[in-house]
Length: 305
Image 1 (cartoon, helix red, strand yellow):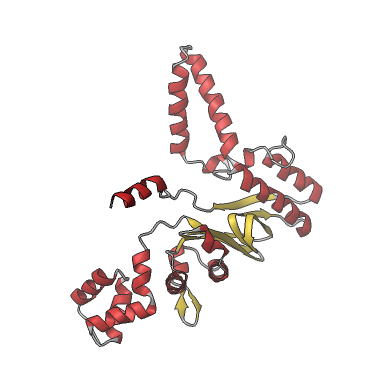
Image 2 (tube, rainbow, N blue to C red):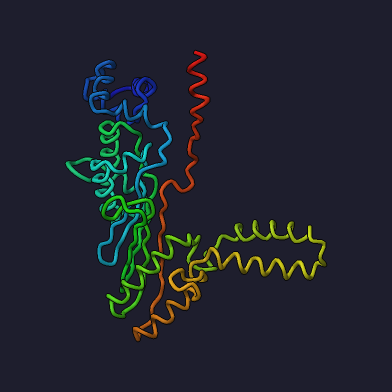
């Protein structure tokens, strides 16, 4: 049966559930508004929608490697406790496995994951079961033609998932075992060094300009001549790029070689060119504005009420 858009809108406003879920509820209940509300509640969709406004900055990052393809995802929850929940871990693992064959997060959310349900459907079900807001926040995939994709998880909570997940793709026809050993070392470096981009060419020009502006103001305060200030700024920018560009960073394993040198040495050792093609680094909650709770103020407020 067909249902009016206004009825769907009213149901959405009352329950907070998604438009498509509201339409389905009304179809399933032959347009009975209150029955549709109960249908949504039974499915856990109304409850899930009410939780959707809560800040979810905990959870897990997870990765999946399958031959020359790999994916890393972040699924957030409200509390760290949930990250140790086996039900939540299973959900994250299943999503990571599906992410390998997806190019966007929208595609991943709409992918069938089990029993005809999409990834988004399964997340909503788990919101109702676990009792917290859950969110598939981001994903990234890596693919190579020939070589290896190495992985590393820092502070692992379970196999293939934890607080920081890193993937490193090395293109080469060289010995795969030696490539994997090198890839894992570089992945550990990425976890620790937090590079912003792979090479200088991929640095956002706006980021460099912002740093230049800051360095210029700081240098002018020194009262030095303009030609000296210009050289100072060039040096500061060079040092800045060495800090954020993966290929120009100092390898944390030996503390002296640049990553470019490490890769070049590997090429000589293997007798085949080695290219650090791409990498991915997901740190849990990165960039999420967390709510700061002042418990003293809360207690005082309760006392006054």
